[in-house]
Each structure stands twice: as C-alpha cells, then as structure tokens.
Length: 175
Image: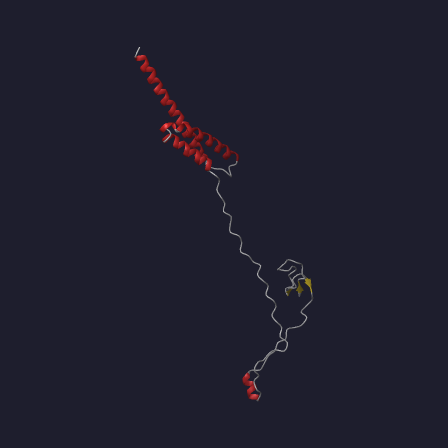
C-alpha cells in the first residue's frame, strides 16, 4: 500500500509511484494494516427454526468504511483553435477601387482619386503577399486592382487625346 504525504490519499496499486491528485511521489507504507472483517449472518428462517429471536438490526462489529473516492481531475479539452485564412483585405480594396474608378470614376472625375489609390494598394498588397505568403493572399485581386486603375488612366489619356485632336483639327479648319 502506498500513501501520499501531502494529501494522505492511500493507493493499493503497486505500480503507482506518484499521487494522481497532486503529483507528489508516494511513500510505501507496506501492506494493509488489517484485513477487512467479513460478517456472515444466518438467514432469518434458519434462526426461527432453531428458536432464536431475529434481531432488529444486524450490524458488523468491526465495520470499515470504503476507501475514499478519488475526485475526478479530468477536464474537457479546449475547443479547437479557429484558424483564420490569410488576409486579403488590401487586395480586395484595390480591386474594388479599381472597378469603381472604371465604372463610376467618369462622374465628376472621381476616378482621379480612386484609380491611384487602387494602384498603390494593389502594389502594396503584392509586396506583402511576396514577403509573407502564409499571412497574406489575394494576388489575383491585387493584380485586378492595378490593371483596372491603370486602365482608367489609359482610357482617360485616350479621351484627352481625342478631344485634343478634335480641338486642334477644328482650329485648323478655321484658317
């Protein structure tokens, strides 16, 4: 029999070397100090046949309480970690601003603000993706933002060129 010096818990398993409650090394106390006493009583019918009076309560003389139950130290495991995917926010914003500059940017020259921002965000997102590919993603989105922002400036240059040529040619006709 082994006993924990810290919590005085006794263990009958010989293979245990540490307390299951607090982890303290166990002390060997030898075998059981007393063998448990077993009291067997005769059936009531047999005593009545012999002329004995049945007793009200039969209690063993040397009753030992059962060993203390070991409190459960098991805890449920923590829930699994939620693994977040790589961040795509800058690439998404680059693409959105590039598409806004192509579609809505012609109104009041709003694209002159959104297109450069889309290009800068796209380039910055690509540099982040190249530097830390496990943390950042969205390379196609960043490229779409750069291309659409650049496309706005190309279309703007074509429109300015057409208007410029129109003005220039209309001035030459008046001569």
